[in-house]
Image 1 (cartoon, rainbow, N blue to C red):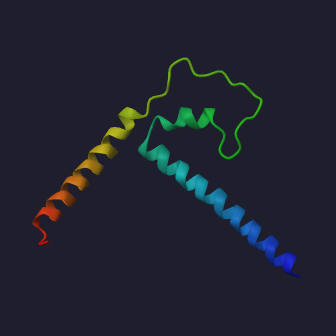
Image 2: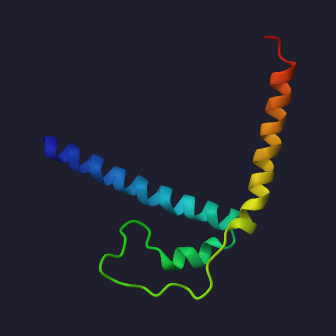
Amino acid sequence: MPWLAVTAACNLGLAWLLIQARLEEANLLERLPDYRPYMADVPRFVPRLGQEKSMPREPISLAGSLRPLQEQFNAGRDRLRFIALLSPT
């Protein structure tokens, strides 16, 4: 009965995919407040084919929401550069 093992593995993989997508969306909503309108316009897994959805009147900008993450990244990068300068070659 190898089909039973394959079916079970596929079901576990699908369950993992659904759970992981929910967790990632929750994380993005927490870090990027402007993600909610984007989420409403874009389907989770399968793109809308053949359906033309009207674009929002004002473009959604995530740049302001990403600024704190960019600052954290830059600070970490600068620390690594400093450590690299101090380490013997």
